Length: 255
Image 1 (spheres, rainbow, N blue to C red):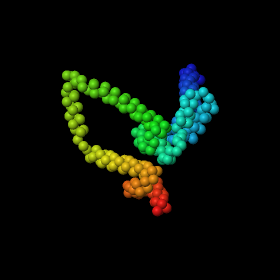
Image 2: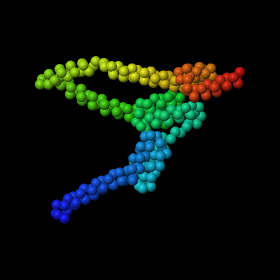
Image 3: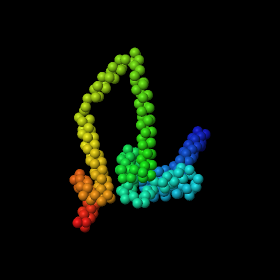
Image 4: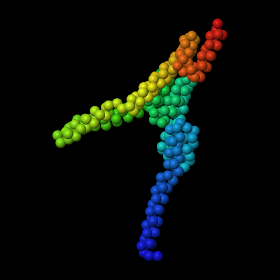
């Protein structure tokens, strides 16, 4: 074998060895792999699977700080119903929905769910805690966005003489872009339709909660009225159907 062939084989061997080392340090690390898998399950709200992955990590490395923190946070997320709270079950449903959005970082959607829970009990500690956390997350994102926008605006306000012709052309292009295309009109219709749907959902939730409050206060006729309005907007709402049947039976027995 020639000297060149030997050198070539040695170089290939070294490259493969380095690649294998890099791979084993990253994807081959069982701690990193199971921790990351746990995070993926957590974002999907598959909490039992997330917990199982993180417990595997601690079996390998009992002092893994990120995993310990993740498991502690998981315990704090378990909903704890308050004694003598008549709305506990409904609050739990809103809380669980909000947490699903929270875990996948859809904070605005999470806030809407938490707000529904706080409408029933404004001092529920867990709902209030994660509601505030969502607000903080959104405030952080908005602050970052505003900072970047200010930098861009500051730079665009400075028009140098040699770039003036370019600026005029840019303004002309922007005017052309401002004309509404058929596709943009279609998008606007879709957005309007979505806005109406969202508004209807909010109205349905508010009426449903109003019915719960009226029922708990013994105002059965008001509860019937609220849930009938829910069914007028959403005929397939099974909870409203069940509650309406219950309250009508109760009124019948009372008479």
